[in-house]
Length: 439
Image (cartoon, rainbow, N blue to C red):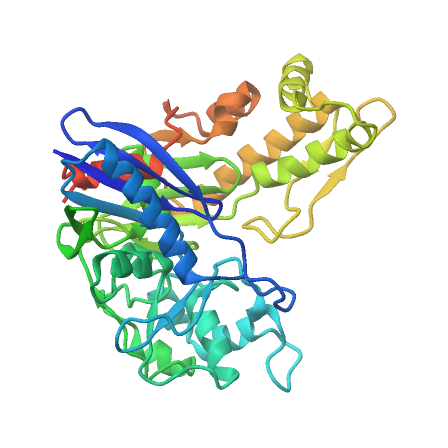
């Protein structure tokens, strides 16, 4: 049997034919994720829902031409953000993206951000029960902003963009998989945390029914084909399922964004975020660890004048890797990559510069030292006493920079499994379709 899998990402909607028998992806297709709605206030990030649905339908239709025998539609999507639906399932709002920053605006009549108002409304116990999930683009933060603006209709249904796409394609009510319900569930029992919603002034909503990964939520009829549609799952969990993360492994993902994660058999809160995993289990994770995004700031600085002069710098990352390998150390240089709000702070810096040590190789070796130290520190937030016996390391940075790989091996002193797969989320959907979510 073959299935259709699509991943609704921030830059593109990509898909593939999922071959159950061979365990391989076939016939990749991609459509650009729609641009944000223009003319909004600074910090607002909204996208038209109908444009996203149209892009997803286009990808599915293209894939069905290659796999007319497909019988299932599997979806993963970016988490967080918000779409409000009416009783008929029609969108009342644009997609308010997880990138949206309006919750950092001051609360009415106050100087502190609205995000802090939400956090102050919850007890520490409630925050822990919600998985310690609260960021500017969190569903709860955006709902609170709408409520404080008098723009939260009673009885509306909150949904993620993945829920909306599946519902629209299948002509069915929106349902949410627990992996997409980050910061919304009482993780002690698995239901919606209505007590926390009331405290955050977002009670009175009609929350969608929760769906498991093994049950269809509707049927997609398109161009003469009929497929069982399944609830969208969170893209982080899809990617980790796609690398076949083991129970005794620590996941370290080194890419544009970065994270450290481990699967737990029961709800075991730590100094980290806790999200739902598959088969009733959980995922302890620290996200927003400085990595590729911060390294790109360094690369942009190093190549700024050359690009301004019109020189071709398309090989800059290869040259950086060569310089890093050639360097013998950091020359005493240190580099904190916390240039953005991250798990390691938001005030990056380069220190201990001398007339002889500020070289490309030294700088990036120092940056990789910081990254390896950060991953180790974040892993201890998951569990002060590590109960994993090996590492599963994924992301393009590990393949591109042997110096980073060596530092991870040195810091952790554990066997390391390198994952070269670049389509982790789609492989995760394939694993679900094959019944690969371990119970």
